[in-house]
Length: 128
Image 1 (tube, rainbow, N blue to C red):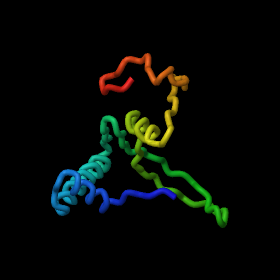
Image 2 (image 1 turned 135 degrees about the vertical axis):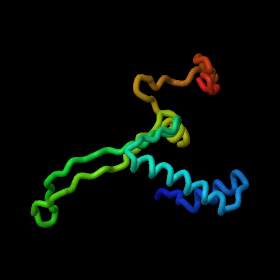
Image 3 (image 1 turned 60 degrees about the horizontal axis):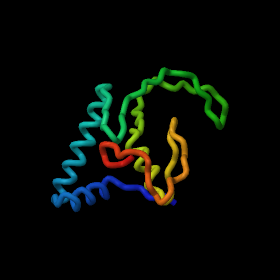
Image 4 (image 1 turned 60 degrees about the vertical axis):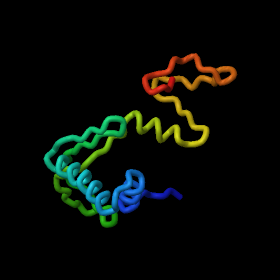
């Protein structure tokens, strides 16, 4: 069973983490979400480096079928938000599981080097 972080829990976490009153943390969260929604309504994309990007995808109208009756149903054109996860977030989520080190495209799952020594030089964030 997976748990979900709700908006009120997010507000609580922000309030505790940066020592803000809950009312101010709620204003902050609402301001960010409202700004994101407004940008998507205007058809603009949102890119948060290391996290991901939000875009709006447009779908044309089509004739669908009611699965219960089989009768044709007109589906109006629509615009839907789409989220594409960023590489850094994907890697952080995948590596957060115990013992999980998944190989990504173009990367081989090589066995660990002897005595835990790595031949790779550290990158800009101190990781090989």
